[in-house]
Length: 419
Image 1 (spheres, rainbow, N blue to C red):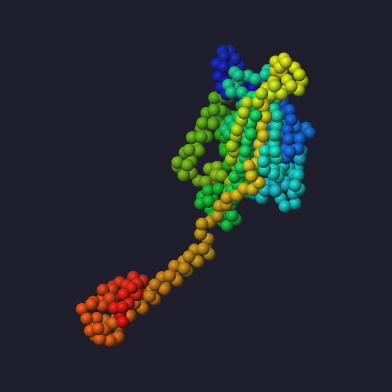
Image 2 (tube, helix red, strand yellow):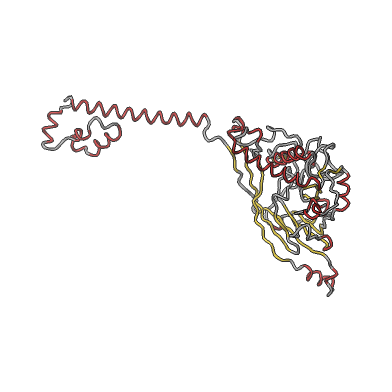
């Protein structure tokens, strides 16, 4: 279990300590036996209490050990068939075929379907869970900061709590206000080359371990592949085939070097402009969440003391915390990628420019002919010169070298000279 600690240097430096390079699938049996119970005391959704709170959560293996996910899709809809799974972990008994990333909920889906919909906004309609943890299960040598890690993710994504999370401190009440960010892409853009639009549709790129493409799945698979190639094994939370070995503490340094190698490789890809098929581009249709959190210290022991009328609260060797997650508004505006100028737009703009230039050409030629007539005396130029006296006629000052609109404007502004 030392692999789950922030800095497992101690066991690695102990002399005469045998560190296993790899483990078999029996590792999961040990992990299942020593896991801490989730401690879900009470939870509610859409203002209704959930009878059995543990049934609302699905246990999954993550880089932080065994975590519990609410509203995640079944493993059969996320991973390909070759991926090994241990017993009922990441197993969802509910029907998860009524939702997908590109289309959302299908038209024939029921109101109360899975993944569960957030039908209304506001804290009273959100999801609330009360968490309990025994003090004996807290290990400051393994984790310096105690509490819970929470990550908001789409139902098709595997949570990576070492990369993105927010904390629920012990004996605190946390409230998270969520605003979804949805990016879609028009079908017209799908005809463009991937290198130009810089995104993938889920069906455009196939992955070995995952059924559908996403940037996170692609990066996770790249990390798995480079770890397997470098160390001959993978971490316990990575997708793998049944024959692939699990890395032990003896491979700890190799795993960290593989992670660093992947980061450097990604930087080199962008620097050297590697072909897009070797780069994990974002999804053309994606869902993420912007979130604001607030928290306050929760003196829950006073409440318990009033309820049970006990003065010795030290008997409760427990920490309690609560989390409320809700959507800020009922509606949100999605963003769509689309082509800036379609062929029809280009032709319309091009035709408009031709129309303007055509009209200007007509004005120019009219102005030129009008001046030519005056200069050639065809309009009684001599008589008009005599009537002007010492005044210089405006068409001399304008001149035929001035073209189009400027010439006509000068003539119009000085019409008294031309009568």
